[in-house]
Length: 520
Image (cartoon, rainbow, N blue to C red; front, side):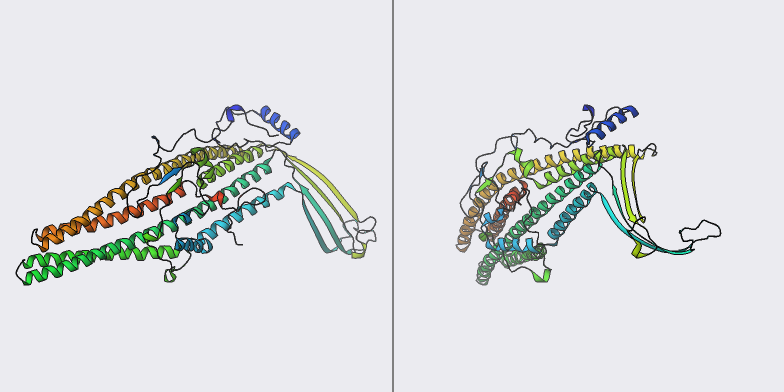
């Protein structure tokens, strides 16, 4: 049984709505009722209800995305009945990616820090639970004294002024948790421990997602470099043709110089791509817990990454259960609710029980003999009367913190739904972009081939060929970028839906889930 606030004080999404201030008589009634029932004051926490929404987007999603011929152009189907695998990145069918993620999970220091934070939070819970039990202390004291027998009566029966005193004793103290202050404090710490557990899951999900996206970006850069190098080869071959034609007097020297300029510009465009690739390799090394001079041996190409064709689309009501950031916000809301109870209990009386027992003798051999023992029992009741408003304002501050946590929870839920909606829309447009860029690349390749043959026959000018080369170069790079964006947004959907941490198969015997990678 718990003492609940009035209806006006009941939490809305965990928030307190303050009513009128209670008078001294009302506080006394609450105190007596709680003392009799052994209750915990303050609001009981109830999990917020899932948002009453039917979908992630305003309009119904299509059953599948657009498709086109060629790598990365497959249609992706949204399956409401598909759960997210615990190791969702394996759907990309890349052994190199699986290997690098395993290294990151084993050696990334950010993950290790999150594990340590979780252990710390759990130990704080255990420490606070110790206040439910009596405190027992054993002590031993020794003193050598001289009594002023000319002034005071002799201390000893013998009248001797010099004596030694040996005193072993055991003290027991206990503060009954009558109003539930300690129970609420333990509840708050347990909620914070739960928050750290989901922060660890969020760290796990962020790390694995970052590795996947970084690998996709590396593959994209390699493909862009390869495409640009192919264009360099084409332009080099064309330059040779133009030079021979210029030697025969068929074209002007200006055409040769223009082609040399175009070739130099294309070659120069490779340098920024190689710079980005080097930075991406440094990022992958850091994610794997390595220094830059010890970069991973894994290399990533777009051809080695398979586009998952079936994507999960869980019900919106399940998102609040599966997103680690929402569970973190919920746990923080719970902790704030419990702190209101702690602050409320601090306004009420506190009972203290103490007991002491021991023996005092002038010789060690005389300890625990007849007449040397002593004991005492005591009970105290303390009621705060005047604290300068400190306790009252701490309670109001706890209520304000509860309001803040409730607002932050709502904000987190809204942002999570927005994240999923944005990713779903991105996947639809990614598929359309790949389809359009594939068509553009195919047309540009045909146009370039025709232009080269026409130039050899003298049917077109050099400027027309140059335009065809530039169009083809850009279309190839655009297609590569579109394919990479589609892969990256696919990974983003798995992350937005929670990452499947509940399917890693590491539930403990108590029914709660652990991370499965705490190696301490």
